[in-house]
Image 1 (cartoon, helix red, strand yellow):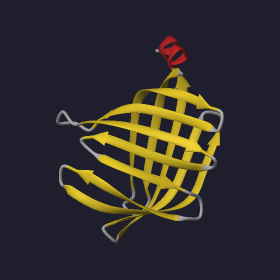
Image 2 (tube, helix red, strand yellow):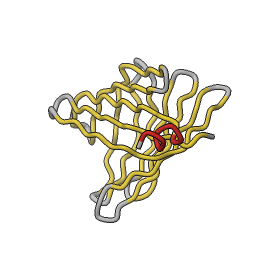
Image 3 (cartoon, rainbow, N blue to C red):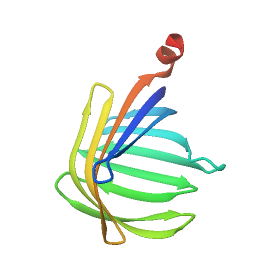
Image 4 (cartoon, rainbow, N blue to C red):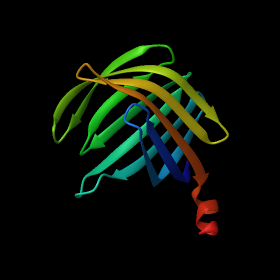
Length: 138
């Protein structure tokens, strides 16, 4: 297990928006892949624990807390899940275009539908840096 600083960039192509977050987390290397666990603060005292698991070329993202979801991402495939927020339950469908892991950088590209509505293409990039290295630079 390594403590890491995670720079997360999410580009929402259809909306023309992007979001950037910096979180602290824990990185667990596994024989068949890795797990990344971190906390997000959504504001208004709403916290979410997020786990990203990469194994055998597919990714699974699980969120618990103010938002609850579990979604699998498999390149070239459409997968379904649920997204529970304080505003209610939504059906989630993703068609994964690409998953890439290179040199401490995780990239995920997918098309998202919520309750059948096309939300467009999302691209998520997570860059990880050992926390000890990050704290020495600060």
